[in-house]
Length: 576
Image (tube, rainbow, N blue to C red):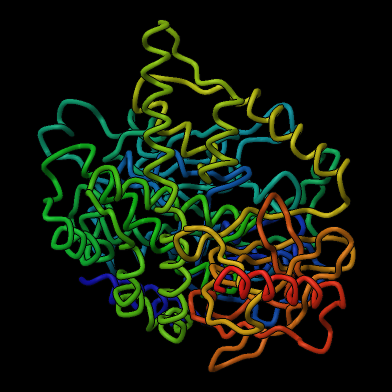
């Protein structure tokens, strides 16, 4: 059964149980300060669980886009290293809002897995919450009694709060849960060790596929639990793991969800998947990360240096570095996977198909920018490691890590990853100290927040032609955003500029940057660290284009005109 059919079968099964199918909510959360990304299928129904709003339907089913790379649920470090963790994943779920509860949720889950998908019953195990003294919670006897009518009691496992009490975050709806695990090992391995002994022990072939959460409580900010106004069901089944189980694969990445992407990378790199551990990790990291990057961009979150945008930039740069180091990709490559995203997911998530070209363009620009500094940063890191080995040291200082971040755009977790690959560790407290020092310097200098420069074209210096010309065809070398209380401002640097920069009390030029599609106002021009920086009202839609840079001739300062006259006279005298 192909992945698309597995997904549609799930939806059709619950539609037959009077569930309403609803589309996935965006992967980027804009209206909930407790969450940065959607990390579970229930996020869009949070207010219904809390009783703050009436649910539109009593029973719902869907496939929700989720991302777990920050906060309480963070799987980033495991992605690529093992075969079953992901950054972005689909969560198949069915919900009841004050309607059915534990009995139906348990019975229907077993029916779908064993009768519809025909997974073997003797490979399945279930777990039940054993209770917790700290929260004054009793064992979930109700769920246990329902399960023992379906499965032998020796297949029911008692689980701790860590494994069998689900919470969205530090606060919010929560409750005990029952997990369903599957043993995918060979018959020979199963005879040697019972699957029950490997449940929740991080065995790559004995994995959880479905979590049935019984929402009964609300975790308050003081840590206490309060009964919800009504009892609800919130289930979540990892789609990638389910596909793996049904398709009889030993890895999520061996399924038809990922193999088209791996096959593309094999053809482009000339390397084969399954022959070298480091190369295999690189394949898995890239094909996982391209999904997270593409879906977040489609939902309106562009890579940036702040909050959710920075998380996406970290993921993208992690993928670029793996491709550069282990698959020998010296040029942008991630963006070429965009058509596969559209083909494989456009049916259930139409936004990735509708925005395919835009997604590819954003990714390519990010790749191009990072690749310009990646090689220099990696060489610097190699030298740092060599120096530490010579001194019998194994810790990269926080100051060094911050320099890599500040100068070469290396996120902390990327530097940490590369350090671990070489047997080194990283002083994260020292990095945090350096970061705070920089923030304090910025606050002392100004109340504004300045982003990092984003490279667009190679920086071969700025050619100022303003004494001789008031117009030029120019490319943007780099740009950045400056945030303050009044809003966002934008700065950019041109490779050739006729704009005179404010200097010695003289007013900087104003004017326009003009392309075929837009006309952008240049509101000021100043010198910053020997750079001629132009202040614009908005960023160009496509910064890589060539622009006509035109000075507002009527507003040039008188002194500037005197400078021009003097310069022209000097040039004429030299020619004579």
